[in-house]
Image (tube, rainbow, N blue to C red):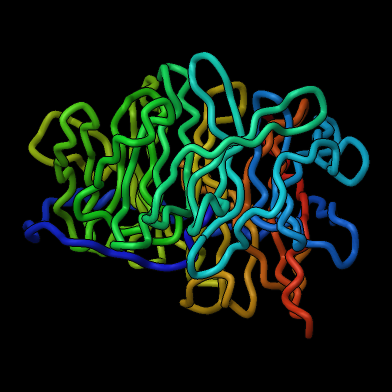
Length: 384
């Protein structure tokens, strides 16, 4: 998922730097493996998201429908019917200034669903669709006159309820709520949306985000108290957390630094988390800017990787003129996974196949009647 605008509210005082300079920069020749178009010509498969538990993908169509398709674990493409297996929602909000993303999967200890933005009454609100047979059953979660949109959903199955992060556009605040108590809204103080937005953590009820001073913050959702956990140099955006097997399953958090590299942090018991790794763009690449970074673990649960796209221009996606799809390793290795042609690629999402990991992503194709968001799937050569 991507929040394709920057929004900041409030901020924290800037802190002095305390950085460990451990930089992984292992230049390699980009490797093209296999790259396949998975959407029919002329149709939008915008903002593809993956459910790796149920082996499905969900996306937004140009007719404002949300469809879900079964994925083939052997090939990394749709199983049948061009991925139009389950109609999950109709007449939803398009992705524009008032709604910055398409549908999202969410899950908790008891169930799962697809979360999205759609009008309820006079303004956009947060909705959920659950699968009943082969069709989605839609239900509004919020109501009233305040515009709520751009929803992200937690997938932490240790939580009793799915946690939703969203933008309350009426007063430009980034908020969170539990779906079972949607009238109880909580502000994420000082959050900057960036491109990926604040995120829930995989093994915690906390939320991680970056503030307007460019530092990483953890939000305790029990008392809604934020704690700044970094104080080193560089403007940080789009923080994520994951459990890294290279460090005994410890929680690590990364952020994009100055839109050009990825810094990884670990809690070693000091006042601030320690930067243990900095992974940079290959100096020979003509796509020097980094966006849409997400972590995943592969190779039998032994190695950490990042899916991302690199682009030629330092502009908010999808305004770039040329971009490439990559996998970076925590060890500093890099692999380019698209076919190498000039294209406006963005937002890869990882899918665990039977024998390797695939990346599903979009190519934005200019069209006189509006951009076409093609769906693509590329091999990575990495074992799941």
